[in-house]
Image (cartoon, rainbow, N blue to C red):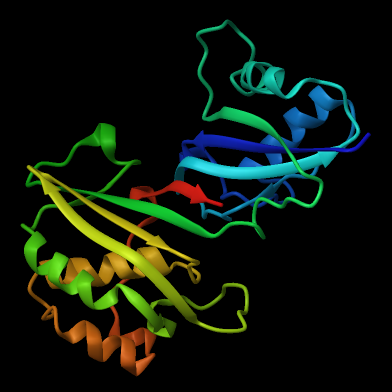
Amino acid sequence: MTRNILLTLEYDGTGFHGWQRQPAARTVQGELERVLSILCGCDIAVNGTSRTDAGVHALGQRASFSGDFTIPAERIVLAANNLLSGGMNRNSVGDIKLLKAEEMPQDFHARFNCKSKRYIYRILNSGDTDIFRRNYCWQIDRCLDAEAMSKAAGYIAGTHDFACFQASGGQERETTVRTIYSLDVCRNDEEIEISVTGDGFLYNMVRIITGTLVEVGKGRMAPEYIEEIISSKDRTKAGPTAPPQGLYLAEVYY
């Protein structure tokens, strides 16, 4: 009997060429499919909710797969994590970790059934660089005005045509209209975290939003200028694309 399984997983994106499988390149999807095919005894194709880029991390990625196999869902997590970590011992930790595996209806699809997603972006705003965090945040030595960034974020929240926050080279979309349910900028000492929840995101959209908010934080843009950027639908008016290592897929909602 064909079964359909939904996985919840986290991963450190540093050592991967992104989510999507590629020939001769290590990817998250490729590693998952390799391990699950071993466990299930058949070829497994995994459908992820978000195709994260190289260097981007996940705290709550979701992925589904189906097939005719007998391993119980509750055993998939332990067995897969053992293989993903190299199987050396129970305390070994790999760069992908399954958190949950659950049986789903046959017509469920991790990507197509997704209602919304939340991403976070982490910035270390300090005069001193931290080599141990270089792969996990954007390090900016110039002091950022988080209040101005938060004010600018208010102009982004809502339903808009976000063509200005779309990078070239991504998959062609029918529309660039999206709804941002919330966009929060929070400072905690030297750390700034940007949290954004929306019904969908264009290619590099969160990273471009982050780069634009940083320009506001540096005083190079007024918060009110965001309205003009959005109405222009012009990518060149927005800020730079923030580097990938500060971005985390935090949650997926169904």
